Length: 367
Image 1 (cartoon, rainbow, N blue to C red):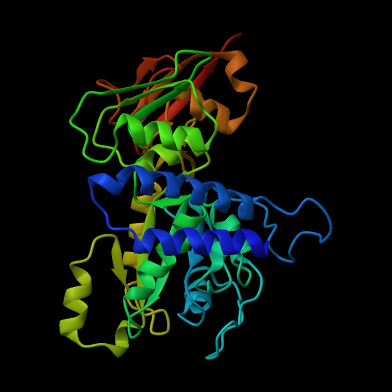
Image 2: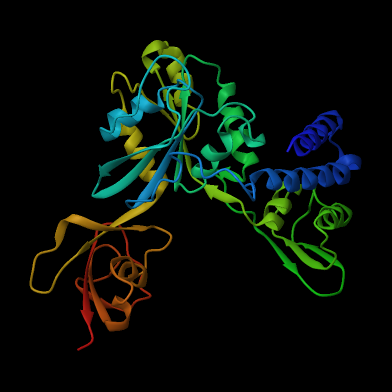
């Protein structure tokens, strides 16, 4: 491990020394590819010895999972206690939480699992502290809640982002709009529908060569960077929404609070005094991008107490049936839908119909 760590440090030092311009783009692309490969070696779990870390294998429950990530002693445990009523040890010294503590929030009919992960330290992506387990658990979440301390420097945000990016988690980003397809022969074929300023054929060949790929088609639909191409080749990146909860706002001035309010993806809170926790839950709900679908048994009123929760990206009637029971599609005949996704109510629809938030659905089975 030490040799891998040394190699990573050497490459990072060389990248810091290298000036960024067109002449060095090819060299930097190559270094970034080498760095991504070394990082993957660190991420791969050791092949022998040592069982799983205590308290990290948390069973996924509920409709969505939110991970609280942050430096030690920024108020993650207090936030978990206030939001879920789960007890996670709280103290004014650092590294109080040593394992992963789960809690559940009931919000708008959905069960949201909240994980209080131990404090991240700088260098977690390189295996320091319990960083690897913390960030590996963070990869299984649907949304990341980065908790920051309002009275500590805002540079902490950048450090945490860097640690998460080192583990292949991309925050508030969309997957790169480029196509990478391996083939058996024909060399590297590079096509772009836009003018590129970061990538050229030589850089693409160098990055692919580092992965021992000598025949591939690469087509760009936007001005992609070397990092975007490496992300697509690696194929293990996770694109995840992220909310920054700035805690302890009771200890800063109104002027500082107004500056924080202008930043994107931010939500100022005070966990100790329970300020703006509703606003934080609203923001988490918005970033999770979930919709509620109510069921209606034949001849009865709709059940508004216990909605079926679906992702807004996968919300067809077929997804709805699968969420209730995997065998339901075999007996599916058609569905009756009341709500904003149909033109008249009730409307008879097939399983391809896309549902919207707070629709009411009745499934008619084959006889």
